[in-house]
Image 1: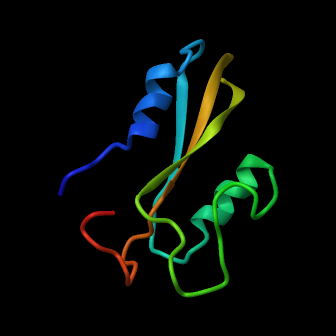
Image 2 (image 1 turned 90 degrees about the vertical axis):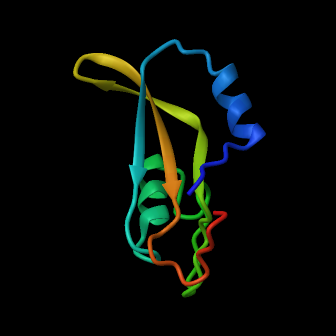
Image 3 (image 1 turned 60 degrees about the vertical axis):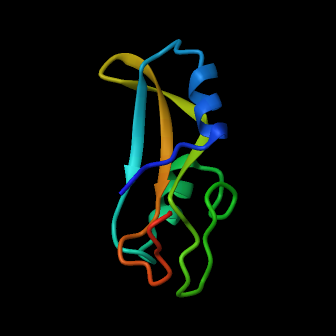
Length: 99
């Protein structure tokens, strides 16, 4: 397999201010098990306003998506930027090698 970083993602991380440590939050697991829903809940922005969800058997997430607005939180007494990553579900029926 080969990972491809989009130009948009490359630019995001090149321009990132690096004021605080980054704490990534990634949820991986079988497709259609609520990973995007849980991330939306953790972001506190409503069920459908961050990562796409749908009441179908077809996967919404392809590849890895990043919510580009970090949440500043305190972890072990230190402020960190929490970045949320939505990961394509394992075993998705339409999964292809290029996702």
